[in-house]
Length: 264
Image (tube, rainbow, N blue to C red; front, side, top):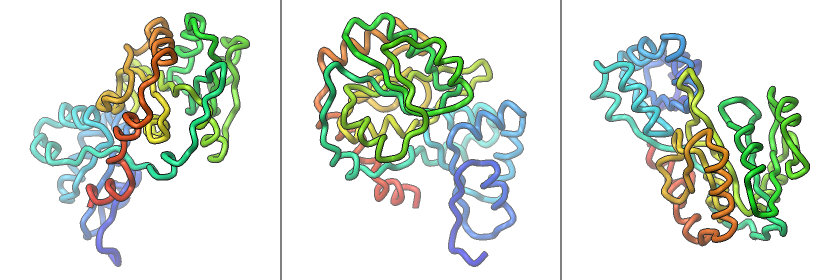
């Protein structure tokens, strides 16, 4: 207990590991932890242990707080006092990226290639996009081979990319897609950072209406697992992109200085 306070990311294992300490504890739930604990029937015991420890909670989205509240109604008052705070981004860094969208337009996905990310939905949607756009997918994961088989010559897989390549993609992108789905287990996204970074860079974001992104008004939301709705949103965004100043303003409050002040 040499520290004045402890902030843990993920309820397990980090927050549980901090239970024996005696200094003030803030436990931040990011999404995967909440869904995994609920699926394994350990969410209630974990929350009761944190409440007994007199820990404070933070959730990266209101949806995650609602899940916790529904799981443990007896702790509703404590959970309602929790902070809802998406994680921060380097707003000034992304705001400074000079925009130079390519022609024909490039649509970007930057994500791990796993089922919850809905990459297959985006690939199917591209068959219905009327604009002469191409889809670039940055990231890797266990679904890559299967997704590659679904793709056509309008779609390119880059694999995992370094930070400098991510910035180039944001500079050249006409839009960023976050086509997440809700899994049968009830798991969905928290608040994917790439969407926040894209908005800060002035890049339009089209996302499924699930998880924490639903709370950001600047994002073009579409029904999850609806390729035709996603394709229509892509065409509308390419034909009439929102003003970059509007997009940047939507995430100005997510600069790390503001986030740290709120969590403190």
